[in-house]
Image 1 (cartoon, rainbow, N blue to C red):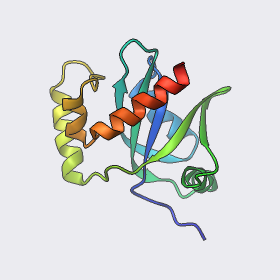
Image 2: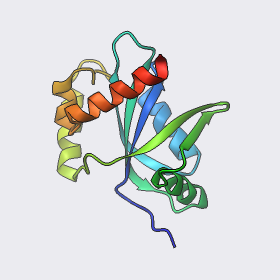
Image 3: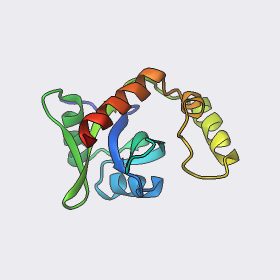
Image 4: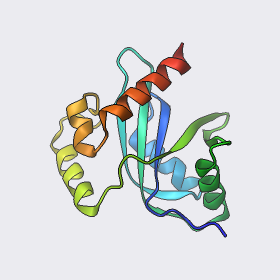
Length: 148
């Protein structure tokens, strides 16, 4: 039997620039996959796309959520979240960091101090969340391969 990976976070390498954090949260909730705690974006300059990191408060104990996690964990498959048919996001497990309650509080306090909601564009801010330079390079390389 497959167990839910409660702390599992996701990496979505290509999200259209006009998608909001609230839209990402609502997509996972409406599809009975999970309750999203927070979403962080990194916007690639001169691109219509951004990268999303999705952290969950909880994964729902539904068959949909179970199958979605199984696809995310299976390296031979791609987990696609259809948020607005026919549009979808490819979702991958984000393994670089598991955030603690203290981390979430620090991040939320920092984010509240920002003037604009989606300002995760530079490495200094991303690093505060635990996103490493390797993550940014991997994301940028992926976007380059998709956009080219």
